[in-house]
Length: 312
Image 1 (cartoon, helix red, strand yellow):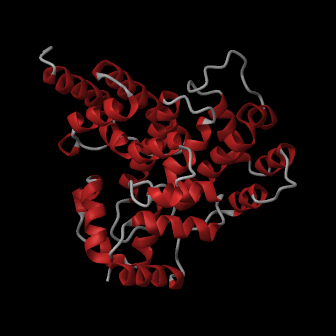
Image 2: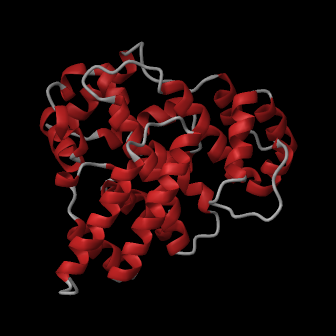
Image 3: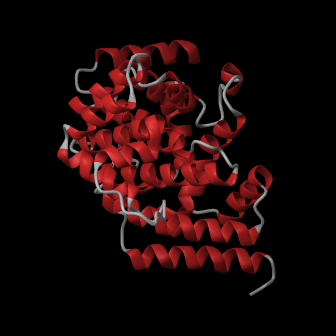
């Protein structure tokens, strides 16, 4: 029955004429990613065609995430710094967010959606540092797009999110709701959507296993990548959503078991993520919320976790 329901969902997606789609420059970048004859100079030329995208990539290169001593002056320098894969991921991230943010929601609050998406991208990239994955920029785009299937479902089957209101911040609840109504969750829709965009296969596969399911189907994926994508969401929830929807202890346990982070390390991670999230929110034109509230949330996490240790 579940398989039959899943096929019905995919049919609804195929018939929907109003699904989110990548803008022109993003489509050109996707084409380059599948062309074996493409080179980094061609990628620089395509990025340079979009002044807004170029400016954001340069700002990204000069952000505190990279702490470069020499300021990046132009797109060519930024592309050389990020490399082919890094530039591809970053350029697509900016292009897709800029385009899809303008779409109208049916049952979803788009502001909440993009807050979590950006927080997850930041967390996914940061976890790449923790596991010492050499190409951390590879993790930003799949982190950012791992819930993109929600936007597709919201267009194709509007009633699925009707009435969720404040519970949109409860990601576990959303996944359970989707499975009850549709027989599958938005990871399935996200994988299908990104395949229709012709996004690189590695990214669509990471989206497919982002909720910890179907991992056995893609056992050739780097375990470090799989770990980062699977656990970036729960960690992101610690920094972006309202206090009552957070479970710091469970996430701290994940951080220790999966990434070897003790409470002190985990608190340090939350602090760094909060800072990077705020900085990148400005670059992506995402409303991250009140900076004072975000800092207060980080401090609350500290108090809760230290209390659990009997320190306060």
